[in-house]
Image (tube, rainbow over all chains, first blue to last red; front, side, top):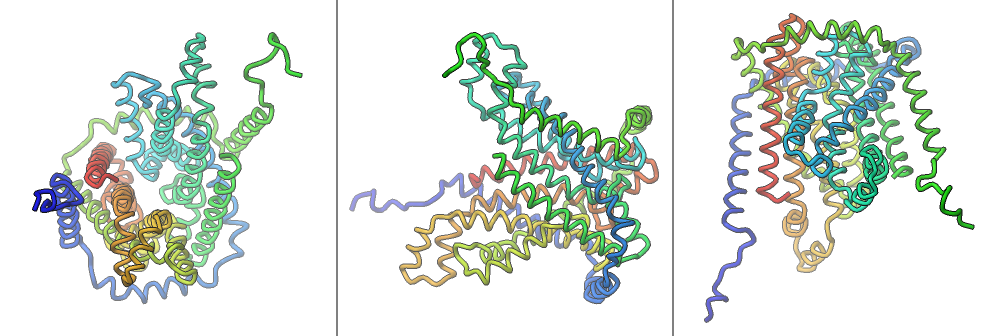
Length: 266
Length: 262
């Protein structure tokens, strides 16, 4: 019998198997360690059904009549915050994305700096940014808009930078060969190539920001979250239910709108 | 007839696009005035901002025990919620996949995911704080719900994109449904699932630093309290730690994906 027939075939190399085993082991160890040490009070779980029942009873009937006077204006504010925040984020993210793209800026130091900015912006949650801006600008929509903008830089900048890196050299070289200044190269070389990706990223981020703008008010940064916070603090669960329904309607509408727009534009 | 050389523009103006940009500008001005975002307020804020920044630095790590306790709790919440979320999403995604399941099974599973996804984790956390009280449990449950919504959707899409040839081949041998799933479906989607799960763990880690603001456990509560007491140097220490932890998480995710070639 030849040696080839006796050879045992395996799907993965030993290195791959060891790598996978290490990952499995670490995951299981982390989950077990977390489960054993996390401070959960099981007694609280026993009366959870009762508490949920109580909550639902307090929420019903939903205070629909509260919508025109107390919910509509903050809800519109929330939408404005989301939109303005997205636009500001894009304005700030475009230069950073240009710096982060290796083919546009062939300077490793600048690439790393730009990527560090993007990761830092992303790591700080919108609500934490909002806390910062409330401390600086006082409570209100300005803080919320800036919080949305600064957090979104990370996401939009990263994706936009990746889109720039995937763009084709041909057009860019042609423009550079004709002696075009950098603005022309950016507008006529890169922009047409990244335009579909750009609109997809903006729409996707706007959709996320609509959701986020609804909770900003919990830390005082404007929008419908402030109305929700007031209702919760006063235990007006029927009003809270009204606000939750309104948020749900807006979120669903925003998702439908972005899906439709994406089909049209891209 | 084609226009001749000299007055032909290589880039003719697109008036529709220009009109759209103008409309956007008008909207921005309107929205800014509606929200009362005035330059005067901005300038006043910048002055505050300078003082605020001065108070942020140097970061104060003297109360590191509090900081470590909060961060560990955030980490625990993120890990447990990701594990629970992944375990729950697997069967749900299988149920929701239209290419493997009849409509009566996929429709309810999809509805569950949409409901889980529609609310921001912080709002879900508020509801769970009411249901199970303050603490890590509310945070775990809230992030689990968010994970099910997000992971479920991604996994369903991955399962719907698989090649059905392998499924057919395994079915043709008379294999029961469980074997079809294990030998025909899982090998095709496994590495993508690992990618999704590690991405979701990242997302949960970010969110677990925030849900403490509404009392659902983790570092967020400590951070919010420090803000309200104007302990800005401690705030700075907390935020720097959060950034470091999340960056470490991202590096780890890349390594995990490499191990599974996802």
